[in-house]
Length: 416
Image: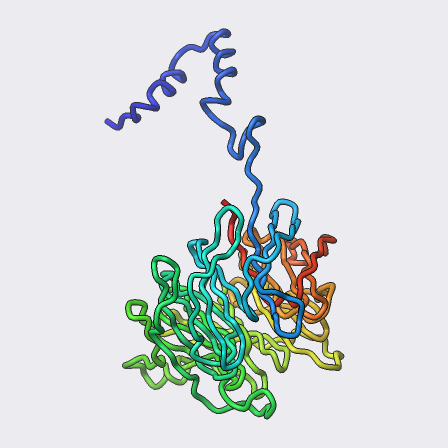
C-alpha cells in the first residue's frame, strides 16, 4: 500500500475529518502561512524580473569608454543607466557566460585585436578584468559558447578565421585549442568579398557541429566540434550514399552570389535555421538535419520592400523564444523586419517593418522574457525599447529611449 509521506499525513487527516465552524475559521486564519500564494503575498510581493544589460560599443573615434551597464525591468520595460561597467577598447561584441558569472568581449582592433574575460559582480553588475588574450586574428566581431560552457568561439572578420578558447573554472581564457581559416571561393563583390570573412559562429543545439556564416565566401560553413578537446574539423561524414550527398549540404550551404551571409540563427526546435545576408538584404530559411549537420534550402525572402532604393546593410537576426516569429534589422532603411514562421515547414511570411527610432540598427536583442525588443542605433547613439505583441509578433515603441555612445551589441544577465 502506498502511504503519504509523514509530513503530509496531518494535512491529509484534515480532509478526512468533519470540519466544524470553529475549525474552518482556524484554517482560514492559518492558510496564508501553511499554503503561501504563488508569486508572493501582501507582505512580500513577487520579485521584479530585473536584469543587468551590458552594451558593447565602439570606442575609436567616438565618446565611448567601453562596456556600458543598464538595469532592465522586464515587468515595465524600463532601462536605467548604471554607468560604465568596464573601460576596454572597442568591445564590439559582448557575451555573458551561461552561468551568469562571467562576460567576454571581442576587442575589435585590427592586428591588435584581443578577447577579454571579465567577472560580473553579482550585486552591482560591475566588471573586473580576469585576463585578455590575442584574438589570433583580425577584427573579432562575434563570440559564442559551446553548450557545455567550457569553450568560447571567436569569429575574426578581416582575417577570416575562427578560434576556440577554453574557459577555466575561474572564468579565465586558456590557450586556444583550435584556429581554422575558412576555405572557399570568394563572392563577386570585390570590395566586401576579397577573401573569407567569418562573421558568426555557434554550435548546433546538440553541440556536435559548429556553423560559421562567412560573408566573404557566400557560405554557411559546417565544422565538426569535439567538445572534449575543443577541436574543429571540416564536416566530412563517412558512408553517405550518392543520393544523400546530392540532397544534403553537409559541408555547408551556399547562398546567392554576392549575398554576404552575416548572422545565422536556429529555430528553438532545432529543425530549421535562418541566415541574414548583409549585402543583398535577404533571409534564407533552411531545414537542418541533426544526424549529419546538413542544411537544405527552403526559401529566400527579402527584408526590404521591392521599391526600396539606396544603401542598406542587413545586420541582426533573431527568433522569438516562442518560435513563432523572426526579426531582422536593416541599416539604411533603419527598420526591424518581422516575419511569421510556419511551425511545420519552417518557411517565413512577411508581417511588417517598424522604424527603429534611430540610425543604423547594427544589433537588437529580445529580452529573456520575450516581452520586449531592444534596438541599438549605432549612429544616433541610442537604444529604443519596443513591446512585442505575443499574438502577432508586432512591435510597439514604449517611449523608453536611453542614450549610449555607439551601441553595437547587448547581453542580458539576471540580477541576484
